[in-house]
Image 1 (cartoon, rainbow, N blue to C red):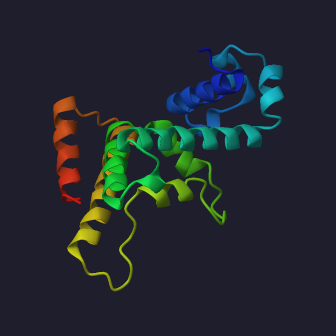
Image 2: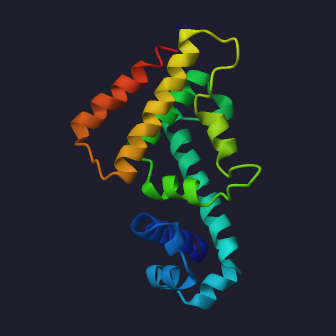
Image 3: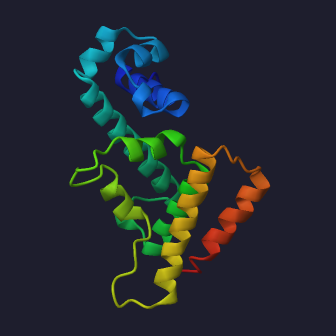
Length: 180
């Protein structure tokens, strides 16, 4: 099945972000990357802001689809441990530079809500609540920080790990979550 022009535009924009960063997303750069005309882009996204919002929604949907595929079901049908394991695997294994850069660069500092907040709240281990002194809650949060750190290491610092080492690191992070 052929991707729609809207999807083609969004995927081209993600490639631009992966290669050159969020600031490089212009109608010209995305038009050149997608092979579509500027008018074709404007049909779907009447402004750069609309394009950025579309990219954001596309990235969140893609990211959550990966979680659901790994968990085998949507977040609301999983137990906490399944969600956390899926989060660790996706964050440590397949998260992209574009997602990370977009999370960092797409949200104005004075925004009330980061666009990814709802998806993260569904899947990622949160900060243990005040008074929760359980090792399990703390280990889950530390595992999240470790997965985030691996993602940043590979996305931002060019620290590509070979598959065997990445698998060992991910297994260790997942072990922090225990058996559930």
